Length: 417
Ligand SMILES: Cc1cc2nc3c(=O)[nH]c(=O)nc-3n(C[C@H](O)[C@H](O)[C@H](O)COP(=O)(O)OP(=O)(O)OC[C@H]3O[C@@H](n4cnc5c(N)ncnc54)[C@H](O)[C@@H]3O)c2cc1C
View 1 (cartoon, protein in one colour):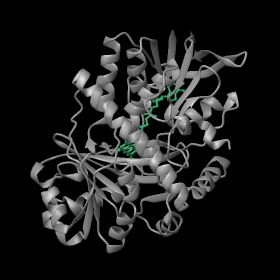
View 2 (spheres, protein in one colour):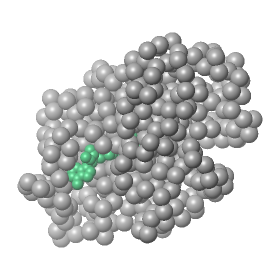
View 3 (cartoon, rainbow, N blue to C red):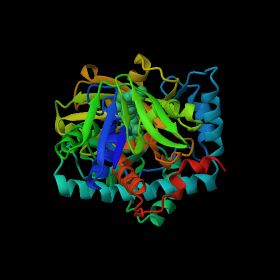
């Protein structure tokens, strides 16, 4: 059986791996010259199972209104006349009730925990290298209010069997000693020992190599132009060069999935939420964190790779714009100067942006639509975290095997009711 996968980001490549392991003849098509050259390139590097939660949460509309008045805030909206932006924001606002937040979070935790198991199996089988660390995630709080909010939010973690510890200031320093010189800025923290870190770009490129060694074909530099369906089912793919006939197709084009499936009458509720990162060489590794430190006030993550620090965050609603904003650069840089001032020279860091394919409820869209046409997209803020679980799940759905986890509510149909 032949399957064609559209997109060689972390989602497309993990899907290719698991479908290949099921014995399918897999071809991956991407417009770039290699894998993980768009949103999967320089994300925050958190593989944050325990931190998996939707952005749409109670209290967010109020916080968002406040952020929009500040220059260095986690959120910026460039108002657009296009309906997609307003539609998406109003759908997201609807998801901000307590009951919807709890439902969405527990669904995300289910997939995240499955991803944890799936990545562990993949690592055990392949020994793949990606500067991975298993040292947990520390979310730091600068106000008592943040500590109280975190205490209230631990029910879903307990229900999902996710280990966590609420720490005082000393506990935070014990976890991340490089925070010691700025300890006065901290009130407490939430530590998630099961969370991991790693370079998503390196992982995806190395997994693509392993896929090729196992017989997967990668067609790079090819622009997908049309998904052709005939007689109510998937037929083939038209690219800038040729037509690919296959039995199945998996759409894993990140933020670009929406426009690709639109002519088929499939309405994906995703919006490209732009984020930025800086990657800094470490001059003084002891002055840098050991794992991910998540600054709750600024919503900026700082993740340690071997000899580099990746600092990432901000959400900008600005369509498909890919320009690099100097204001956003400063928003991120000032957090490094504030927390880890001696780790390296932030002015020399590499600056990058990417478009998170975000659904209003934070959960990706995984499942079949038109017979033979599968979606694996909309992973938003957590595509690296959820990639292995999503890829494995799709491989079960395509081959008609019973998935290891409940999968019905990942389908697009949840937006049709
Ligand atoms: C600042 C930032 C920080 C983040 N931090 C984290 C984090 O710490 N942890 C985490 O889990 N997630 C994080 N994410 C989210 C994560 O990076 C994404 O969810 C993930 O990369 C999405 O992967 P993807 O494969 O769906 O999309 P992409 O990586 O964008 O892949 C889609 C592919 O489709 C291809 N494509 C698109 N259109 C066409 C076409 N017409 N023809 C051919 N090819 C096409 C593109 O070239 C691309 O390679 C972050 C994102 C950002 C922006």
